[in-house]
Image (cartoon, rainbow, N blue to C red; front, side, top):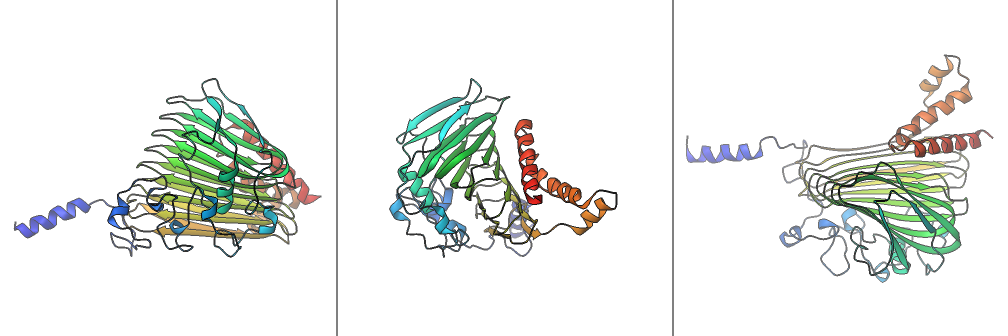
Length: 430
């Protein structure tokens, strides 16, 4: 064997077994190239944060998802015009000043029910854990960061395996614009379920930081069951450690306007993120969800599934899903899907899946989106077996949304949401 043949064989062996995407080279399509110095740094957002004192993306502004500005300082964010990619679906007049005014109102009251081993603390802005898992990605989040007075920190200790859920009830205190901050920490090897239940009447900008240390397994359920006049903008960012597993479930039913932006970032290899969502919009409601998964580490898995239903005049839902697979994230396996069911005339559902891939050396990546009315074949099948049309329609909707409800894994919460969906369906028939 010649020296050249030996070298070729060694190279082939080194690349053997590496998954690839047809049509992409090993280097992939470089949408947001990094300089060598940038590739080696370690920041909160991985390589998706610029190396200056207040963050910022490295990609093409307003084109690549990684190019969005991130900063702890409100003054770094320009005034929102509504033409920006992250705001083009949001009715700014209905934000009640969350993006323009000082958030000096009383924050929703926090009550926590938790097993004895869980630590619950109220801390000041200078606590070291604040900022450990998130950095504001838009002006509303930065405004909340600038104005919150104290934060609630919930810690599931290392190695703990909770047999009961942690219930965090956030009760709105009125319609004066306010800021809220919550930090959830799952220490090394911890396992548990945390439920954030938003109720009452409020106009609030909220930052939720979720930190999963190595080997942690955490489910976070965020329920939005506000009063009809409420406005809620919530940035919920997760930092996922080595071999850690996150299940995040967003359920939006109440409120005049709800805008949620869940973000999952992998801080080490081997992590897994499941992001699920359920929303049911009635007449005049605006329910918006924008998910972002940043694959900045190799051999991580993500799965995003959001389902929504709409009924009534001017019912509006928005789902925008962003997945970024960075150049160094070899071995990634990622998928995202959104499905919407329009029950009556007068509603509108916007669905925008986005996928950026910077390396072909991945196990898989894909996205899907569908919006439509009832499946006539499903209705015909049920009605042909003697089920009245109105009952058949309820069964189809119930089955459509129940896939998300079953992901929660807490029987009492699942039962509560099943009853809430039934109430929504009752309203559509009256």
